[in-house]
Length: 536
Image (cartoon, rainbow, N blue to C red; front, side):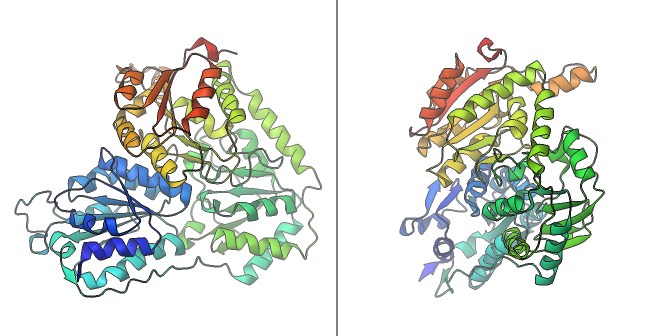
């Protein structure tokens, strides 16, 4: 005999879960009874929002769902922002929470942590939210959750379990992990797309976040067509940004808009054409040639830009099919001029940098030269990160994760970096976060120390909300709420057990970042935007 909570953790282990993030509470302690009998590691953040952000970072680096254990009521609502970020960016996340006893649901009798309808609270920012009323249904509900992570556009799934169900003893639950295969595109549609790509004279390829597991297939296709390639922020590294045919994550720039507008065929792979991917350019992308779209979600195929040829299926399988079909076709393509066109794009973008931007990009270039290709860069919403979005060259897939798209949550990067390092312990992790954003989740430095996480946390200090301040100045608005008191970050970080330094030179920054991965605690590196060593 075992309780529902004990069976749950055994099922999670069967699905390959090796880490859960959560803060125990009186309603969820039964979930912890069976953990020591598994190989699952428990990480304790300092806030449930941190649990969600850590699970998010873990999922983005590993491709596996990040898993959270959350207490009823405030635990769930504390993590709502993290679930919203994951939902916006299509990140697989499994949130297991308690809920009040079945006889108390919707009764409004003032039970501890009570919400009128907790499942309905999370329904708006999850793929689905389910209340488990019978332990015998546990295996089926988990199978549905994990099927949604692979068989369709992923996102958070919330499963709430009443306290009296978590503790209920069960005799047997089918405990095999059932993995749903990713859907394959229609053969005839792939053949037609290949013929159109081969016949195009100046095709352009746009890769989105759904292509992160199709890097090899993506590079093969790019080289077969000799086509200029543009990435969204979620796809940085799918094609090495040092590749001569890769224009990087440069959708905001007018010259890239022009490239797309002049193309006779655009292949858009697993992207939603997000407004935040062109955040510096309010003009929508103009597509005048044929548009072929690949996406795992049928509804998404028809949003924003309606394709001439929609391909429904997994990006990796579809690209593999296109590559195979192109083997038998003569490719017109750019006739060797694609590399030249990409070089001109990069030169034009670089020439548009003013002195302020050049200082930031120079710092990023110094870091890029020093860091190994497998480094994972994690960026928050801060000015240095905005430049990294478009100018930091990512060499491998799942090597750049950011909250600056979609939901745009401040403070995400620190806990996300901790989750990323836990998910990929062999890859160096570097976090870029502003002084304003860091104060949202500063306490998670202690969680990083406790978990033995070695990562670099670069604090870009501009004494407040610098981007919003610049916006207010440009709009001639009064400067209210943007000039912040900032604590002694180095002192606070050291008090929490971190290694921490105020950087005095570019060389010191590189030394601290390079040493951080070998430590068993985070390294905080404070940089002030006005530091003279950043001057060119």
